[in-house]
Length: 172
Image (cartoon, rainbow, N blue to C red; front, side):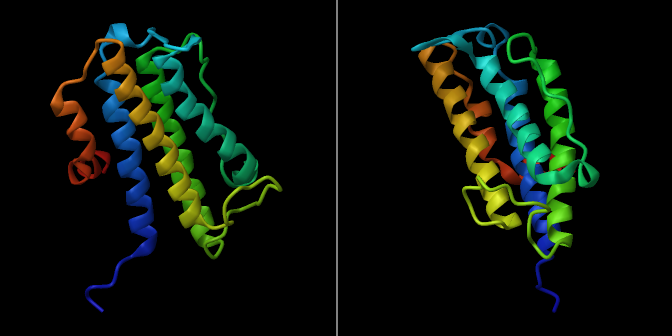
């Protein structure tokens, strides 16, 4: 059928769009916002939230990907990583995530391994949804913190995060 969707490609493109949206935001954060302390959590900074996104991916890749299936990228230092380092790290962890998604699809849609603590069904669609929600949560946190800390982001940034056709074209 001419109108059939290639679900493998659609799933991978969904991830690419999500990753590009995260990077799009981080690339456009004001430099002086990066080290701003989070109200109520003075030991955390906006940059640490961005670093956490990459490090979280690494933790999941390591626990679900099995090192022989997908090699885990190096984590970044939450306290010292700068914007450029985090953007580069997100690109590396995104590539590993794409391999993990592909391995899961090749495994009949099931994740390569299932840790006992897994808190969602053991399939690639739920895994993707979990990560899109996780990263969307942190993007929202960062935008809200920018406003709270008097670094309101321009509309082309906040609106640009919803231009998923554009973000996907950039990701390809």
